[in-house]
Length: 205
Image (cartoon, one colour):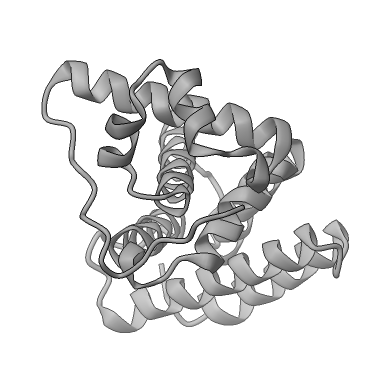
């Protein structure tokens, strides 16, 4: 049975030492493995604690709930995507094409690991006010990735940043429809291509 976070839950602890960062890394890796193997339901806090060799109380200090934990995994995956894009910069001249290529890279990763993708997206959907900071972090990081992909300045202004958020919301919705079997991969790709052309067309270079 899944226990969702409540508004009264304490804020997650932030690792300050190298040992704490390594411990948090083990937790995220364990949660990722469990989600990849069995999806959302397979990620149980006690099993994550055992797999990462940390006390259950320590796990809850870093991640007050399963939702917080899976949002942490999502943030971790987004950081990996950003690193990949920086290691292999996009070369397309058209911002819409760069955005679409970025989303296609992300989509291929979801196709390779659909159970992990489903677990992360369910956490994003189920998150309540107690996970506001984590949801906001996911939104901001995703928008930052899209801003970079479009070749926009780091501070692109509210209108351009809003355009990237529109593409982000389209991406999340399209991914959820694909994961639930309501749309095909080809349809998802077409929808994302349309969104990138329509929204990015007015952002400039």
